[in-house]
Amino acid sequence: MSKEMQELQKHWHSMVQSIHSNSNVVAFMNSRFGQYLDDHPFVALSLLMFVAVSAIPIAFFLIFVVSTAIMACIGVIIMEGVVISIGGIALLCVLCGLGALSLGVSGVLSACYVVLSTLINYWYAQKSQIKKQEALGTSLHKSPSILDLSANNGKNE
Image (cartoon, rainbow, N blue to C red):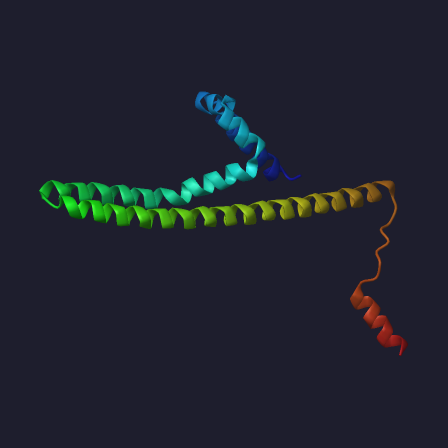
């Protein structure tokens, strides 16, 4: 591995260690819920995505509730119930959509992680195999590519 990659790996490792040594994180990870999320990373990623994408709609809803409460103080008590009910139903619809979206994004990210890690492992395995063969002094015997075969077929005809 290159020096930059090793340095990045060391920096990343120190950042992860500082997060894991935080007392709040340790207390959460020792709880039942933390253990469940540790055992089920897809659920943890889905929950993280849901919380991240639902923060703005919840903030808008809270601003909406506060503003309608202020209007209720002015004298629109009946309208407040109707408007908050409609807003609550709209928030429910948005959060259900965001929940489905976060599950989809988590699925895509999980699939990308599996594919990329497989490709990287395959690439490093090929690279180490080449280095081993070069160290032993043997040459690589590559099979002819499709283009080479088609070129040879064209010459034979």
